[in-house]
Image (cartoon, rainbow, N blue to C red):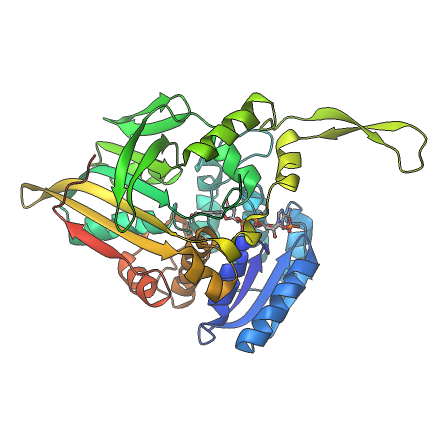
Length: 410
Ligand code: NDP
């Protein structure tokens, strides 16, 4: 049915590539391209052994529009799955426009020198994608991604008016390391050390980082301290569902994780500006002054999220708790998925956080290739029909569950 190019060869890309190969009737040709081609080659070998798929590979620096244009014009994919980092969103979108390719990603653009994410940079491409007759699908992981599709599904089937939305993300897994992040450490630490932000009565309210927290009970897991964070899907959801009076995002963190994070911040290791460092010259003739970004250095010494899977037990539980009106009466609705780290590892070699992101990315590309999600322009996932996507979640490894009129605790 279609030719797909996956950019990136990290945890999320690995899961998406497994899922792409499990659906050969949809994805008839597959290429994986990344900065370090040897990772793509190693992954292609695993995929070939497991599924018999012939995956081609390429080296590309996705910060370079020129290199991307060269690759896209020679491979001519129907859709590009951007599973590299948020820094590359704009260069890849630009290259897609120049070469007539459709686009999908899982995280909104973030400039390297500023820990700040918002959709405006990518929404600015709307007119150009529309005019070119191309489709860009933004934020198609779990959160953002499935959480926005859960909201669209709730709005379509269960509410006349959504008024209160709380997205709740619990990772009750244990990787048995003192400190590790579940996806790219640089992106993860930038995200959670930011100020909190939520939407209430038509405006954003800012909080200090991790200022608001409370225990929430997760199905099959129990109560976990949950912290209010700024998260990107809120930005598009409050626009697409203007009846929302309050929208918030909560994520669980263990005390040990927070203690380490505090230390990392207090000793300056979460800084994203350059500092000078004296490194001994290779020829022994003294020191050379090099510039390093502390957070990038920290990433180099922290455990690689891709290597956490083997000893990871427990599960994630991510969902939406919604309160609103149907037929003039107030109702509550909780829709969620629980994902086992061990089951994810057995299937793909990656832990649950990569799994819950890579599977929806594949389903989004599948929706596009099937012609179900293909309108020209730049779209957040809740702008498409949620039903066929929801059906695929159940059959591709992320089944969901619903609780009607229960206690939302929020
Ligand atoms: P990883 O760090 O494991 O992988 C990133 C990959 O991108 C690596 O293969 C890396 O190459 C490659 N890459 C980085 N820079 C470039 C570049 N300039 N050119 C080409 N390739 C590049 O990250 P994850 O797999 O954990 O995360 C991938 C994405 O998923 C991120 O954008 C993250 O924010 C997003 N995400 C979204 C979630 C959601 O629910 N929506 C949840 C979790 C993650 P190299 O190996 O050379 O470093």
